[in-house]
Amino acid sequence: MSVQTDEPSGGQGEDPVEPGRPRMARRRRALLVVAVVAAVVAGGGLGAASLIKSPAERAADTAPPPSTLMTARVTKQPLTQTTVVRGQVYPPTQYNVTPTAASADITQLYVSALPVKSGDQVANGRQLAEVSGQPLFVLEGPVPAYRDLKPGSSGPDVAELQAALEQLGYGRGDDAQGTYGPGTAEAVTGYYRHLGYPAPTTGATTQQAVDTARKIVEADRQAITDLKAQRAAAVSTPTGAPTPAGTAAGGASSGGVSSGGATSGGATSGGQAQGAPAGLGLDQQLVNARKKLSADEDALAKAEAVNGPMVPAGEVVFLPSLPATVTAVNSSVGAPLSGPLLSLTSGGLAVTGQLTPAQAAGIKPGMAVEVFSEASGTTVKGTVAELGAQSTTPPAGRVIAIGGGAGGGSTTGVGTGAGAGGGAGTGAGAPNAPGGQPVAAYVPLQITPTDPLPAAFSGQNVRITVLKSSAPDPVLSVPVAAVFTDSAGQTAVTRVDQAGQRTTVPVTTGVNANGYVGVTPTGGARLTEGDQVVVGQ
Image (cartoon, rainbow, N blue to C red; front, side):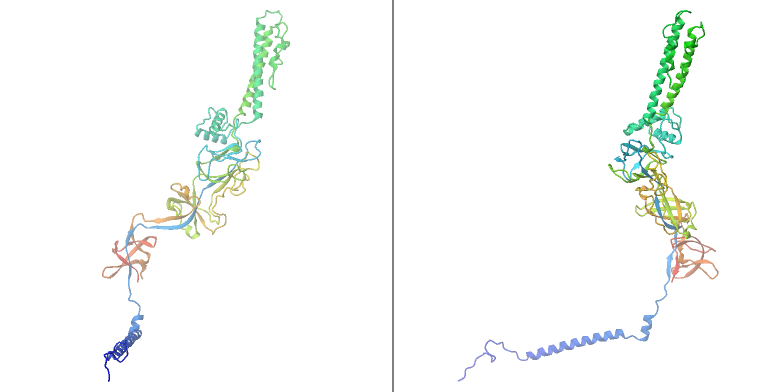
């Protein structure tokens, strides 16, 4: 007996299989493969078609582009022909100051005070330093300090001292210009008092001479007083009466005090005539005594004239132009001095351009110049002063060494290079030159600025533009490439209108600058601002 169930024959737990399902899946996979193959074939065909070109297509691809016309607009502008070069800015004169001892008592120089620093502006009367307790100051004057200025001195250096002190309010009194007298001595004393120092003096020797001369004059005056008293007593005594004590020759001998001048030795009573009044001998003694007093007073005046306040050469720096700028300070307080202590510059800044010989041929004095500092963005205008001789030395000003001479404490050395003049040379005081190495040959272009160059320009390498020629008013101008010369030798440009039609316009040319040239139509031709001209094709 058999039992039937509803379970499939595949066994317990298996899903029933739908009839025809495997066949549908196989069809779908086949269709997908066919589609992919068709796409690949189509893509390859398109790629191949793009690579395969006909001869006509290849000729079209390699043919030059169609001709195009290059034009530029006619403008109206001022034109200036220029030459641009580099230039060096530098102080025209640098003073390297090496202090010297103003007194024999100073055996070593040390910096005891330094009230200035690099970059400071110093005016007339400004103290620069204190060296071993002595001040060092600057005064305005063209003559360098080459000697001590003291009572009795005269000359142009005394005159400049008087003028500099007068600027500071210290007049020379009744002294003549250029003569160091009591008025100048008083001015020197006042100035030193202002600085906070006692005025130096000429020393013990001259003071001793004054003291001695004063004692002699005092003795002379006393002798005259005594003689006058004796004469009065003699006149009041009757003739033949005994001579009062002190009226004899011994009493009149007080008039004989002498310092080598006139004496009253001959005015004694022994010289009187027999029976003559005693007053006659005393009169002669008074004459002689007065002569001696006059001579000794002259000697005292001369001694006083060379004694008193003075200005040692080692304490003053005369500069021809002030204010000046401190460009270098080469020591510090407490340090011993070795070489220049300070470097000063005065007289403004100078600038020299460096032209090639070819450029120099077109430059003339009087041409306008613009000096431009790239560092500050500042432009200063000026004119060409002159062209120098061809050189290979870098542009630089003079260097003058002041003080430090081998001859002693009151000397001034002047030189234009290291070791020149007074032995200081340029030393540690930064030489006034951008570099000492030779450069390519150039023609120096000297420039006169309209306004002083700013202090910040010092030491800079600047751009110099020389304005060789210019059109003062705006002119018609075209690019240089637009101008041509036709077969007849006539200068012309080609104007193109909006329709593309070309017209030759004869012109004359003017200033050429910055790639443009000024043009003027000739022969009745027309060319206006805004027109287009051919510059290439």
